[in-house]
Length: 319
Image 1 (cartoon, rainbow, N blue to C red):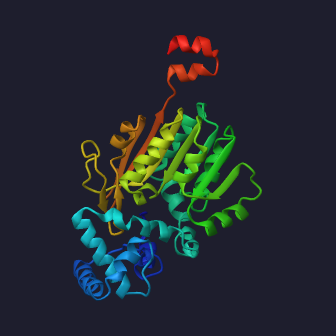
Image 2 (cartoon, rainbow, N blue to C red):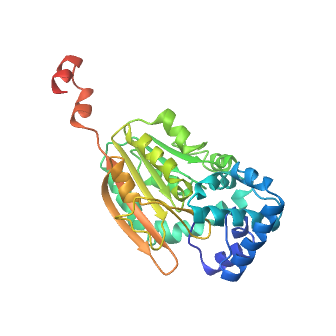
Image 3 (cartoon, rainbow, N blue to C red):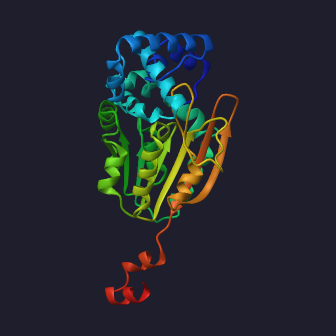
């Protein structure tokens, strides 16, 4: 879920981008009602679609199966079981044609919002924390075109590695060609949860921007935080959309929001529950969107920090 200019919004509405999101709903209440009503009839006639959609198969055609998916999403949202369709998002972001549909249109948004706009404070805060030392690797989760990672690598030459992870193998291949001359930049087509399970270690900083974690279920997001926090010191910075009326200070549950049926997570509460300290937090909102900007760290304990300097015998006296 990202912000766009009026021209970009119209391009989405005429079907070049917006129409292709798997769980998208029309803005008009009448059109939404019509789509869900038709979809219920399709599901009644073709019940096998439920298993297909839950298995992650994207709808075929431009209306009937999309209406059926909308009806199923509406049903699951009301029942509190929308996570049963979470794989739809993962399948969409893996599409080979997504570069033309989505990634190629993000450059202007990055310049307008992140590099010089209202999300800039998050970037500045993260840069300040990383420049202070203690981190050797930066991992961008959902790196898209790689522009953010390239920007940060240039501003933080002290980092040994800058790794961009994305589900879309086609876009990752494009990034590798585009940044081939910059050896410090690495791009991998992987699920971040799988990568962290194999590679997590102290001294890694993680960053996501513009709508990445909103496609994680609460369970998957909490599992990810646990994996990241398992090897402090670590840092996590994010700029993510959240629900307009989602209470970030008392509600512990993630809730579906927006036309895409993505997830609004209670980021401060969930990070603190995973053992992170919130170093900086700020929201950015207007009439149409609300964003959480946050930088958090989990620091190594005194015993862990000294373990590499002390002999096993001396270390045992401290434990």
